[in-house]
Length: 292
Ligand SMILES: Nc1ncnc2c1ncn2[C@@H]1O[C@H](COP(=O)(O)OP(=O)(O)OP(=O)(O)O)[C@@H](O)[C@H]1O
Image 1 (cartoon, rainbow, N blue to C red):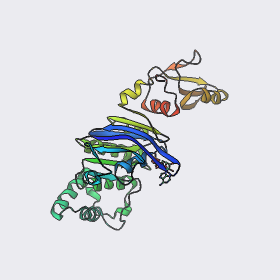
Image 2: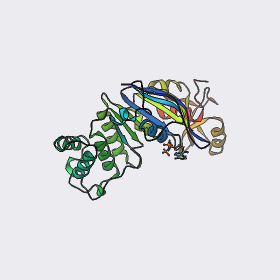
Image 3: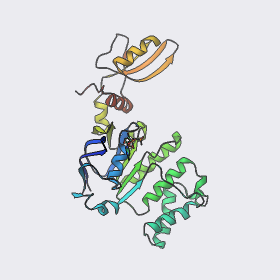
């Protein structure tokens, strides 16, 4: 299975929201990383055939999904950012209802619903009204809903917004468990959501694709370029103007600042091992030091 995004652009009137996006996606998890408004949801809606590109096309196994949307729809599970639940239904009733809409026969649906509730760890609360579920439980229910018809492509838009760290971690593992031979595309603005599970990470900013690479290759871009130094609070503004500052921590000796630079600005900076967060920040701020 191969999903090819070819030079896709999208405009609303004169406002260009996506600019010449090209990517080739194969089974595995792709993390779509970008700040608010980067264009992630717009791209996901195009892949899900909810919206059409203004220019360019998307090919699924060589076939244009705009011309034949059903080839995508038949194998797609899409979890939008604001997926709604019927609060008075319990999980079994809710999933049975969705299964009926998807045209899954009752016997198959029943079996599948119990398997999925087990997979997403909601078996124990399956008879509770879903309106009383926590944010994390609702998102796991969303994944169960998406998996009802065993989709080959799963697209999830910012599923971890508002979740506490434990639920985010649980959700990450769940996505990892379901990936297998599927294409799973997950959008987020939180680097740690994708760091451990994504085979490839697409970094978007202002409608453009800045990078589409394996996490290890992203890290390579900031190799030997991340430093920490203790500076005074007064120096911080100057530092921010000159370098990409990844983090600051107030200490008894001053500000411990973590930043990206080709050369350390003074003899007092210590080289540190880069994280994916550093690489991401360097990319979106244009301070990606090992590339022109
Ligand atoms: N229907 C629309 N009409 C006009 N502008 C739109 C429309 N949909 C999205 N936009 C704009 O396109 C840009 C990208 O939006 P999009 O929702 O794709 O970003 P995003 O990366 O998913 O951000 P977020 O994390 O905030 O959801 C934003 O500036 C948004 O205001």
